[in-house]
Image (tube, rainbow, N blue to C red; front, side, top):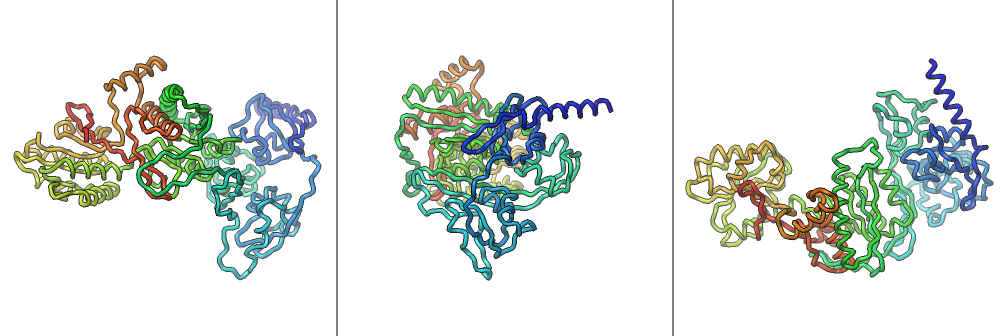
Length: 600
């Protein structure tokens, strides 16, 4: 009981020292704010209560507080005593499915202000109702559109049509997208009302209203109704991006020549050890950045002047949105990263919206390239790798029988079809005949003293293990030294497959890149890296070096002669409307328990 009273006493003291009367009043762009200095114990919720503002109003004035309050930080709080500026209004016809919340965001005012203009809507909106809204540049002409009440199909009222010339230099386009739904969220251990509001991008006050709560205190296991809003309203400054002609092999993008080129590197460092912190992910991000720094040193020697900004994405969608909202961010010529799947998807969409070239540095679904010609994927997809393996075997194997084994997993079945279709397309009269079989039945094709090529295109460990065990059990039917197995690079990490089998049966696989630590160039670079960091270059660090070196060199110096460590980027545009994929294929084999590249 004593500890509770002590806590309440401390809280009252903290609230006392945070009174508006004790805060400096300043004016910014004609708006009056309290200038609050954060003290120990201050919280977002506490500032709301003292200054009578919403969490949304605090976040708009102070975007950085989404990461929490720190003692000594300056927080600007909107003064409710600010003299109101007369608002110019226009009539607006309410459309189907429109809500007070949606209109408040669309016209950039609070729900209370919207109701103040239209007291009759306090209980909700009705389709066809005429209301007053602030006059917003770019939205005036929409006010009376689609006014027929008998219209069955209504365009999404939260998507504003833009001029067809979306690449006009120095223009501004209002982009608004909206959808909503409610979900039930079970409160997790250590979750707070504020962390939940941040996660779902909904004000604390709205959560309390939806759940009839009078306190922000939550219990583990408590069920909350959450209104999920996928909404973004922003004036986006569009930049001119030169059009590409057709598809096919990559051509240097004609970036306008500049004295200094701006690059943003986005990586999930998790420097604040937040809720989504992962030591492994943080380490990988750091290694990539270390390799990138080595490349930046080399690029400087080549005469490229770069301004590089590095951002911590924290595996958090709000953080990423905040990065793109920073003043001047859209002036970047190039965005490199991030690393995680969901982060990459979000960044690709934001880069497309803001017309910024993006380099995807890790393997991703090929869907990331669809309808986004600004994305460059540095890691070859599994389907493209399998097509390359089919071409290699059609060209290099003229006599040994080819047995294509069908995997039992869905992705493997798709890759099976990809290989077969590509082989049928490129095979010549001198290419070996392709035989199709199953994991259980391929051994009937084994013959003594005859070379045999067995192909199983799958990344499924269970299928691969079953296949290799069957190969070993059936090897008495043939000469083991004449059996060659073709699989996928993922098999290298499959510990359940006996490494002796992979060595014994001459395991081969297609790869997007290949790292040989013993080439003279790699030895020299590794020595430099070791001098700088006290450790050897990891594959991730090498990828960081290669990506920065290649794309900065080819984009800004218009040179295709980048000397890389493990990659040989050959970018091909999927179609004129899609992005670019690295189509390069290495064929790698295991020999004497070492992985060696086959020169093809």
